[in-house]
Length: 276
Image 1 (cartoon, one colour):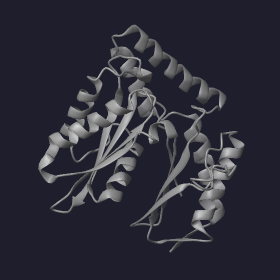
Image 2 (cartoon, helix red, strand yellow):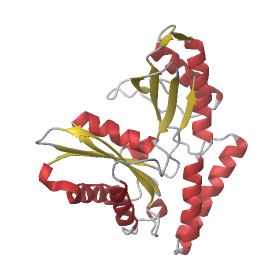
Image 3 (tube, one colour):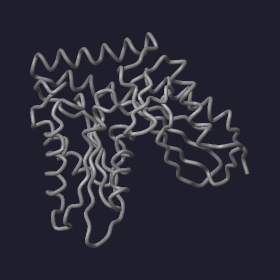
Image 4 (cartoon, rainbow, N blue to C red):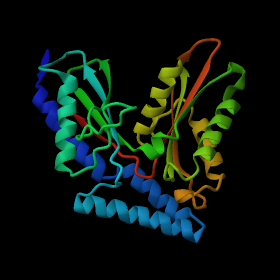
């Protein structure tokens, strides 16, 4: 049995909050650079250049990549041989309070979805936990802005819809979204499970690095090609680059169901993973 102190979790989350909001992940930066090199439309090339400059300034100056520093999603893999002292959820939320205060990031969470009073410290987070073998804890902090999150969709397709039905639904989602989620996008697709799991799978998909292993690499390729043919382009102003990548997560499902969810990440799809 390995003991992890709640205070160590708080410090790790606070560190991850600051890094996630100020440092664009290397795979996203590389994808933006590749898109810039391939882009044929001058206006779109200029916008991609601005996004790269924004990422460079944010990292150098320790500034937020975007004014919408998101509602924080925290994904935690907990080794089954780990014992945590104290309250895990409170330790994580305290790390968010500290990180958002130290980073001077905007507080974007309201206490009640109807009364709409800001909590003032960007808590509570959305927290997912999974028990895995071992004596480590892996924490991923994922700030998710509303512009992209508001464009998420889910559907319970008929099993006969098959792969083409999935492609049609993903494309429809991207086209409805247009420029609202601040493209170029990272597109996360969750397939299988049931309604709530498909949505979680889609979120997990955009939390993965671009190019990570996939159960459907050929479907990912088809989707990325089709999405970029829409011509929506950077910031919705036209161009070859509507999406930087597509990630898919899947799970077994019922014989009568084909759940599909799509979660869109903006050009600043931010994340930071730390291990304790």
